[in-house]
Image 1 (cartoon, protein in one colour):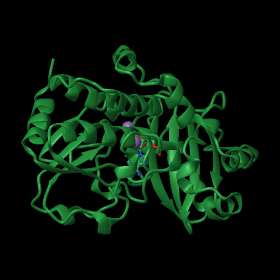
Image 2 (cartoon, rainbow, N blue to C red; image 1 turned 180 degrees about the vertical axis):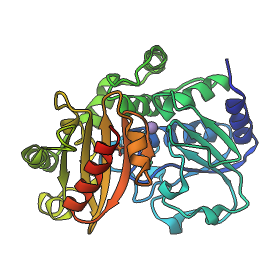
Image 3 (cartoon, protein in one colour; image 1 turned 90 degrees about the vertical axis):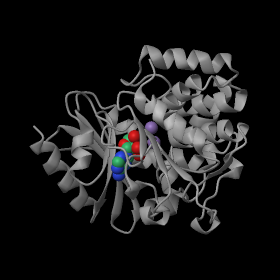
Image 4 (tube, protein in one colour; image 1 turned 120 degrees about the horizontal axis):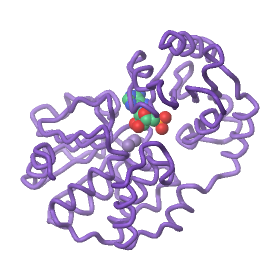
Length: 320
Ligand code: AMP
Ligand code: MN
Ligand code: MN
């Protein structure tokens, strides 16, 4: 069954001849895999397509087909008006470009965040879906696209990233069927796993520090750890390479909420939140202007690490 919103989004994309594809800052496997899969499919139908990722594609995702074509600086953006497609993101604040830059241009939004309300004229939002990559697979199947290796690789990487390689609680039969379809189309699971899961020395040294600092917060309801700018500097790690470290506080037995904080600018922390039912971290993140899903969400906090932890602790305790 194809929903009306998917039909509308499909029509808006088909009508467009020039498109600019955007996602969220701090790009992850789902946002990058989705951007590059949609790029390939749109290019095949003769459209002009640009993809913009603020700061560029992190090293571990550079194996994705088309990663070398991504624009990384605002001054590289094409001047001509285009249909703007925002993937895996439901708020302009997280796109990394001001909304007024695209005033008067058609906007299409495809996303799966619970906190998304649809920032386009055409929106396909399914907060039950495990990944934006899964929504694109539904779109491609509606279009009867023949999946090739590059598209299958991008979508498999997108879905594997947001499901922790098919392990998280967002897993469904549809996701396993999607994985089977993508493997049949030629996605190389071993190569994708190698690329997404390989670790640098600096990452593993950062992990040692993160584990050393692991502690309880919110009256024992949660576990957290963090990295400061000084840590990143001395380890030779970029903040985008700290992705995944929240999984360590998350794995502590008996906790309901996990937090990992990484300092992006002096006294500005990007907070990754994870939870076990019934606590909904998208609600917790929303208290601080962030958002996400029930089991995985994020926000930005300002202040010293102690200030940030106190804000988080108080809010998590209040949530009951
Ligand atoms: P992360 O901890 O960065 O892996 O993010 C977990 C989930 O929350 C992902 O689906 C993100 O897209 C979402 N998320 C992270 N930070 C924010 C934010 N500031 N606002 C809305 N959603 C967010
Ligand atoms: Mn994402
Ligand atoms: Mn996603």
